[in-house]
Length: 376
Image (cartoon, rainbow, N blue to C red; front, side, top):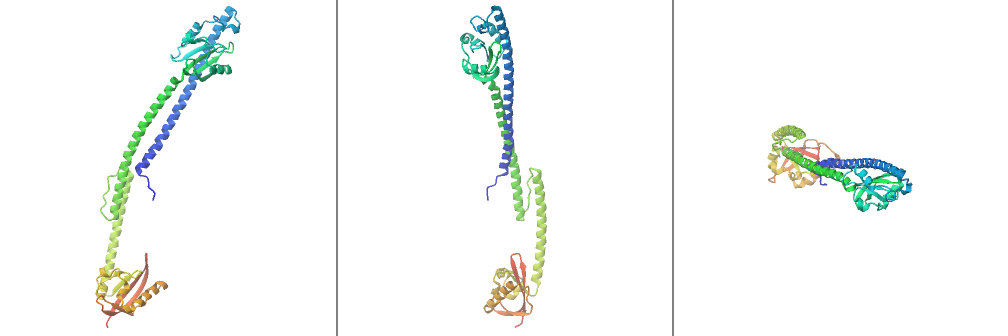
């Protein structure tokens, strides 16, 4: 028989089966919300870059009209003021860790919010410049010229070809989801531990109640007094009441059976004729008081003996053949008045009138002999 899980194990598995999918769903919702907020932030930052680019375009138009410069001359030294552009970027009050820059049509940095004196005039990252040439607006993952991993939202002007780029540090953007994930995992672990502890505690009470009910059932099976435990749940109380009812019914049935057996034995023991009953193997299963007197043998010694032991040796083979013939041909009775020889325990023999019958039983057939002793 395979090893079956305990009630406690099943309850713990059920608890885990409920908690873990909910935790996975919560993590999925956190990731979805992060992606949604990130897309929204990227769109808002692209809009900011677009507004800045419009201000830069206006400034470039003013410079071009005032100095009569051609569009290709806007990138010439002194054509525009990097300090003014830097002021425009700073006035947007972007987070201190964000990096904004203005790039000319060739991808060189014209103005920058961080380390401007170091990077103005240097080219931006080639991958970012290539993307700017492909599309007018986008938000892409990149690395700044000073090596900071960022998500860069940019907007490129169709008139001048210049661009405004705003870099948002990736680590800063990831921090909220990492914090949310840590809080969620910690909360889930705490809830899981509390739930498992509660399930373990309740399962222990339920298991103890069931084990005590099992002990009460075993006691009832041995006709011992039944003591019901204090029920831990309603079904256990109902099961206990059903056990009491079944025990009472079984006791009533057993009492009735004992009364019937007592009456039967009383009838058999007061009968004047000897009554012997043997099973299919010829072993005695019934031996009444009259048979004790007839064969001079106590009942407790006779039960289980071979029925042929009560026949003189000369007749035993014939007696056995007769019993086998009754079993083979299904004869239910033999006519009374047949005279047979019997053998007492002291070795003496006697003559008796015998009536033999056969009846079916749950385990085979029963052969009953009624003897009435005849004077010699």
